[in-house]
Image (cartoon, rainbow, N blue to C red; front, side):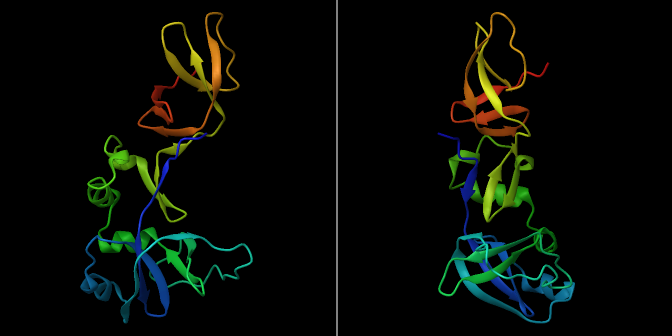
Amino acid sequence: MSYDREIDIPFDVLRLDDYTYLAPHGISIQAETLVRAGVDRISLVNRNVTVGPLDPDEPINDSDAHPLFPVDEFLSVKSVPPLLTRFSYKLLQVLGITMEVIYNYYSESNKKILNVEPSQLSIARGRLVIGEASSEPMMIVWTGAGFVVVPSSTPLISQEEAVEEAEGSITGGKFRCKYGMLDIVRR
């Protein structure tokens, strides 16, 4: 079992000149902002879709992007045929869609993120990601007084007992996993 630190969120697919881009669904977008930024043609291609990684054999050209909005990630709308889309933090920045705006919008309907700071959120692989992945394997340890999380390579003190390996993310200085928020001990 692992703790799910990713939340599916819906996107709208926008065609900006000749390129398809993603914007979080439900958050107001002002077309005038895009026109002022230098986009000539704007259209809505699809609404309220989920996206995922491209198929491994999908041919992409890394330079295939709007000159104003560099691509952070190529994704696919799972349709027939699949639709290649682009995700760009620069586009979100131009539209004024910050992580705080995304947090305020999605926290109303998803209680998983209510206790998370907006600074701990990011978007990757077409999902809202909570926290940062740990750079090394972590394990839960019983200290005799409570449970803490330590890197698996950390030698244990005599009264400590390893309970199990844990998967999760680092959020606000704590380790978030299926057992809740646990303190991280570094030696």
